[in-house]
Length: 188
Length: 158
Image (cartoon, rainbow over all chains, first blue to last red; front, side, top):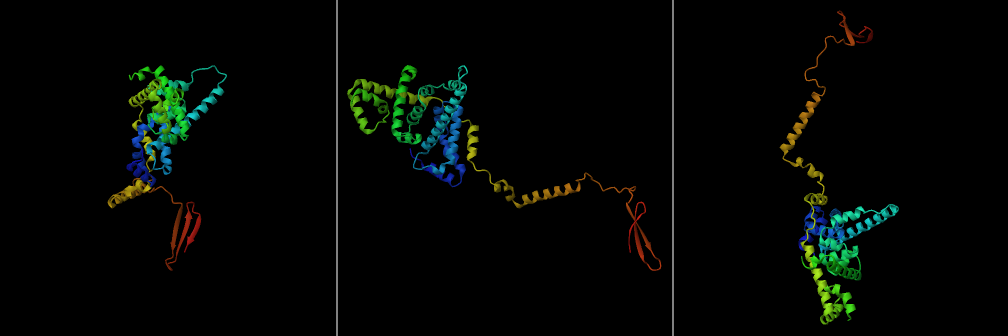
């Protein structure tokens, strides 16, 4: 999906100082971007933060945008990077908290509770069986329908890594649907 | 191609994500192997169900307030010339504003002591310095003495 002429004009306007042109440029991706962030983070508030930060980063680094690429895919790349950064940060914080609380009796973490409250849809529950990398690859390739080349570019990894994770994700999801979500298999 | 190898490649083959060379090999195997063909059908079905469910599910959207707050950050700050744009209005507007401003300034100066009437001159107020003028009838020479309220001499003027 290449950039259309209107987008090209809007990008040029923003770069020439008419920053108000950024809003019409990103408005068509308002919801798709939040949806992507939601599927990657599985939490509405965090998805909102990811999408906001992705748009701000896109605004700040528009000069580095390659206009031969799809603008949508470029935005998705930024959002995926942001979601991954946040996931890593959260994992580090969680590890630090667990180290600090090692001597205390185990209890349900607020993080787990938060995820349980959020995971209402079948899609999100299915995605929960995947590792973060598998989830990123599956969401970008199969749900957002980027091709392998764009997925590789968006995730900044090799095509082998994308294919390995995609294969593993599809295998796990097929098992999950068969065992835990038979209504999806039956099309209900 | 063996079933074992084909099964490893089926997830990617189901989404047309294999390299062309391998695609041809897997297709040839699947066409001749009912078990692999069935598994391929399952992969395709699960993939298609997931995509359909993803399209049908309700996903969150921005509230208008959230979106407006974000997009406000992309708009340029109002430049000074625009903030003072009223100065570019027709001259009579600027003249009226200036007149009102000057009028207020004059009134403020006049009444800043809170005294609306003419100042009262106190009859009882004693001058701290008095002058006494002496004029010679013969020569017309005039001398002015200045005295304080205790009639102590403070100076003179010829």
